[in-house]
Length: 390
Image (tube, rainbow, N blue to C red; front, side, top):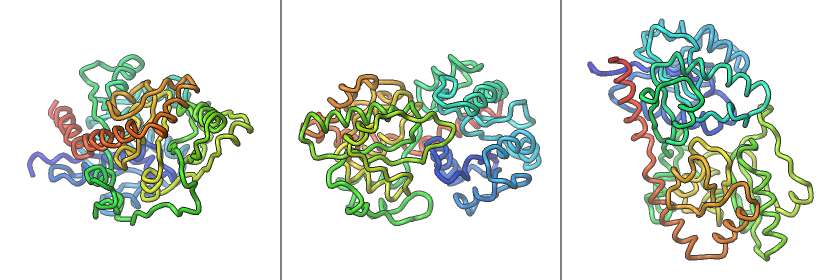
């Protein structure tokens, strides 16, 4: 059709084994864009990217090693030329990984947040992001970001005009939306399928989990505030007779993240069960079985796990900081993430106060269905057409 846009995507980061939130969001956005009638999507990256997108064209020229270090070099030296030869109308560069010089085609750089500029990542990664993201933003035709909070951060720390920054909220994968729309998740015939190919959902094996638990999902990056969460939960276990344990799920620690520091006795008191990185199907089972989802993060550009928990009918305790009030609205119990006692208070309130928990469940489902990848793709295409037509 005449108005079809040929969109190139820098998919360099899509081949990681344990994708974080930014990569998962980018994969979902690409799926939503590819499903439209007014787009042609071509990917650039390592051949491993094809496992996410078996039906989309993938240009892997020069991307012969699946490593972050080599990928960064490929991204700078080879990708811009390959994108030009592919005759794309524009390039989408997720996670701030855009060309650092102007190109013959327009570029939209997607910046989730500026946490590296704040020092939330360690060592080489922090230096790399500080050196490249401002240059990529300066060379871009437009920037998209995921919350009003992140927009203000982008305007404060990166070289771009306000009129060129566009807020597009992340969405939820369809199985979560199906669950949120149903009175009970188990009544939805579609919610048993994940968005990346129909893997069957299952409840987590009961012998591997505590009978009653509070759940945290995320990395061990210090900005996730895991140390205070563990201290708060250990305090609850010492001071109350609540039978719950703390279950933690998320990617294994990466070298780029500073490591959390928790006293061994505190960790033991918190009764922690760590399940590591799990499939999306298993993650839905974890959310479903939790009596409370605790997410006292210090800094989030968006904060997808609280919305996922809400969709699965789990009451959420989260921070009154960064983007989290914007995203969670009136559907969560808020705590001061810098006060261990307040985190413990929020969790105890949800576990003991049936009325609060019931209200959070109902409001949470209502809140979750407001965030869809279709809506996000619609908003992105509006920005894309403006960029292409100049």
